[in-house]
Image (cartoon, rainbow, N blue to C red):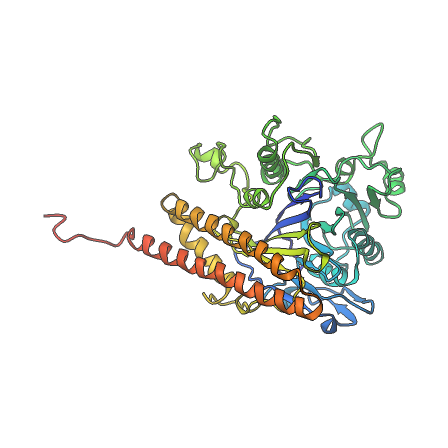
Length: 473
């Protein structure tokens, strides 16, 4: 991200009893402010952590605890404009996704202005994930930092471990709240404050900044006669939200709960939702790649031009990386954590399940520059999107076949790796998982090159500068 700039993302959070296999899952598209923001995928080892974090984009700096944990990491390729680690799982099997850009209403910002030299998206993953041993601890650590140093933006941050999923939202310069996603529920978060009624008698389900209630009371911010609706008090409900944000929640809930009738521009879509069926990896992949399929608002559909451009899609040109951070409970903890990852526009890309207990990542994932390079996973997937979109209706079947075949391959790989890992431990297990990740990624990369070949050949047959001999005779 560029200096103090914000990204527009979509997140899906799933409790362990709402998932098909009992795992917790936090997922998000990282969408840049523009079409290109090159990313890479790395592992940060404990010995490589600094004792002090100093921001490259503002004056934020903080001393860091001793004994950091190793973790996966998806920083920007060019860290001179901010690290922006965005997503990762540490060696304690705690996952963090940071951040979902959100907005505080102008009244609150007048009372608690954003802090230019405070913490923001570019630093959060770096100063929190290596130092926490549970999702709850992640909320608490970041909350303390925000109250002490302030923040220069409003954000939503997801944390998970094997048992709990938490969603934390910052408002103004120093205030925040967090809600535990119930085990049997899910939530979808676009770029809009989501948390609704906070029950201050249930600290097991909610956390909040020290003076959140007194700040709201002192400044007469609560419009309701009873209750404490965090979204109403601190968030926004604007015309822009109704076209840019709420329709994404509507479509995700429509997909998971087709029996519920809701309006895409409603200000009252629930944050916490439950569905009769259990949610799979594939469900999350569909939602976070979607463009309102099956509705008049589909950008590639049969609606009017006005309808097709009414709402901001979830799958969009600004997709940079898409992760699902999965902590499983049906296998030993040493290989329970999987960092599912794809680069590029989700609609045209396949995800790779990277086991998190590793000491390195594949070459084509960890090395990304600012120049287009088809040896880079990021640039290969971005190029696939550039080739596919102009000829969407001609090639979407081939793209979907590629994605389905890749999904079958990686799901088989996860099962096979689980079987072989069961007899290993310690460094032997870490080395084994590192090697297996390389094999899995290479398999998906090979299939992606084959799709690239198909798309180039198809586009070549439909160029405008063509002329058949004798066609005007």
